[in-house]
Image (cartoon, rainbow, N blue to C red; front, side, top):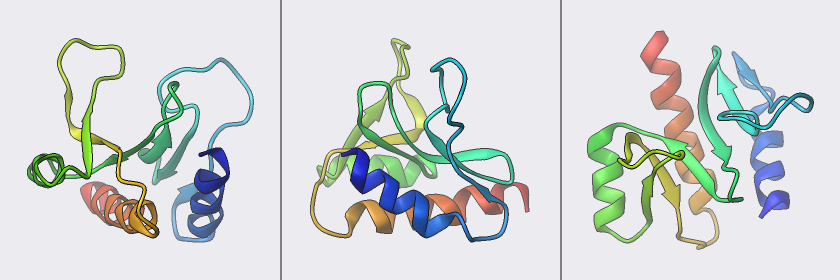
Length: 109
């Protein structure tokens, strides 16, 4: 799991505005996250699950397609724009990370 995430981090680190996870400090939301322009677009949760930020409608589509499940970050209700990717097919993490990067970069740009 961690190695697959590390490969994604390596693939995105050279892109405009991208910063890798913060290596030091307390574990909290986003501490194991890749950011674009300061906003998290993908991460490994404290439960070691791959999570991406996408438009709420896209998250709903992916949940309906059994690609993922809602992300809750310690809350009772799910965070609408966040998906835990449960599909382990080759390339799915990378494709969803790319979607998340484009979505998140576009939110501020």
